[in-house]
Amino acid sequence: MYNINRRKFLGYFGCSCCSLMLPSCSTVPITERKQLSIVPESRINKQAAVAYEKFRSKTKVSTKSAQIK
Image (cartoon, rainbow, N blue to C red; front, side, top):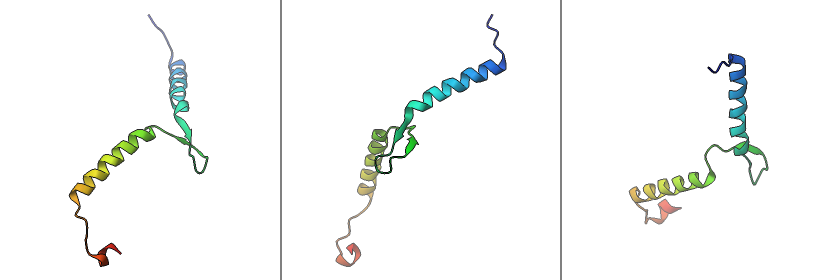
């Protein structure tokens, strides 16, 4: 039915993977270097906020001034 050789398959597969990766490249605002962003920044920030709230709920706040310093 469909007869495709290994070389063509790998070529098509490689091109499709590259076409998915290229749009996810972004520029870092401070250093202006390029980086691969697999997970969006907004998702990372949401997960960090949840983890921080979990940490805050488990940890007691110190009232001693020596420990605060």
